[in-house]
Image (tube, rainbow, N blue to C red; front, side, top):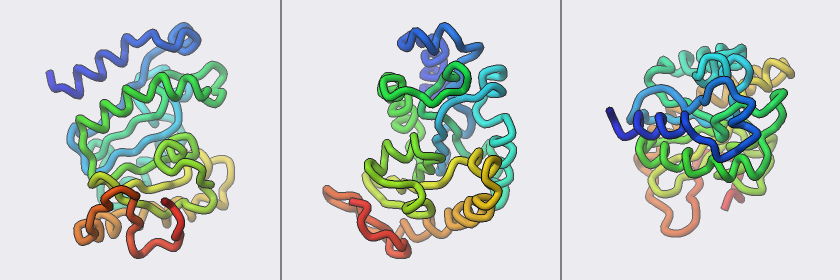
Length: 205
């Protein structure tokens, strides 16, 4: 069993959040390629994910599959997970304490997968890597730190509730191959995150 598989097994038995552990059907550690170049991080499992134990398998997941296909990949070629690994009751937003408690599981996944790019889907995962920023202002932009590109996108579910965001999300996804190619020529930031040159937002530090 690989180190990532072992970590996922540990996540499945987690009891750290009593409310989430009591109410969940299945834990949803994540799925995909073990050493994927791209790692997608969403918010929390929904009803479909809680039933199957897999991330992004409901309506938002179908849209994410389309988005991944639009850049010539299949979901088995990326890694998909969430900030919180268990479904919050009634699909409520994850609480700050739940996000913090689950953070070490996510950090462990990032350390083992070592992705070239982390794509944050929605404001909860965005807040981890772009603290204090608004998703409406920084979606479609990224920064590079510690040899990883962090790229902010709306959550796919946003397009289900607000059709006008669908094209925005599709356009942001199509930028990903260029960002990955460009990152090869960008020098590492020593202390502050370095913004890639083609971005429009200039104050991500």
